[in-house]
Length: 287
Image: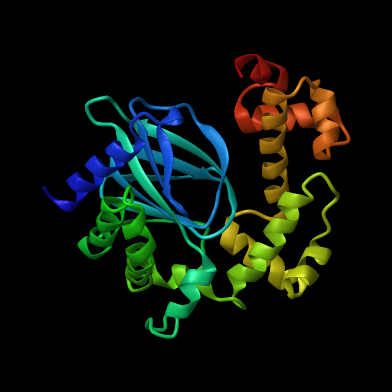
């Protein structure tokens, strides 16, 4: 059995019987299995690497689609509002993926050992998974249901995975995640503020000051990292929160609009239809 086949087998075994076919097997490590394609679903991608063992997934950021399939991985460098969809999945060939959180605290100690590279910025990137990367990922899942092995061995295996990412094709981007004073760290600070205060007025100058940059520099770097302006990013976060509220609370569209920061329900409805293809009322019925 080659590494990709074994990875697929391990993901399916660990995810079996789980509600939603997804399970956190180790802190910061999640496996997921789907037996059929899904509809596009909005969510927030956190800094992570997702390695596909079988099937195909599409993740869309600000209208740009990133497709990745068996033997490929996606790196998300920031908290980003995305739309995810499993394109190819069946009982015979399920969509199987393992995701690992990319923690700056874990990456930082490796930076002095990793080769220096020119800075690379981007919200999402797709690459082919090498044998050197797949091998420690498979070893990590082999021990995931053995607590003593996880306690003793998992930290070293995780370190190896991070090292393979740092020294691989996307090493320059992963390096930026670990830099405490790097551009992505400053943009992350602004993103956290937007997510926490999405219903408040946004002033780019205030965000730039929070990130320690001039407004023009901040705007340029924010767009390079997220493919969106700060205003567009806030709009995406607001609309995703609106969708959650509509499907989980007994609120009218107007009440949701005001709660997420829109002053005009009509403006909210137009933005919602453009983002999701349906009106708020139609979406509530679907949910």
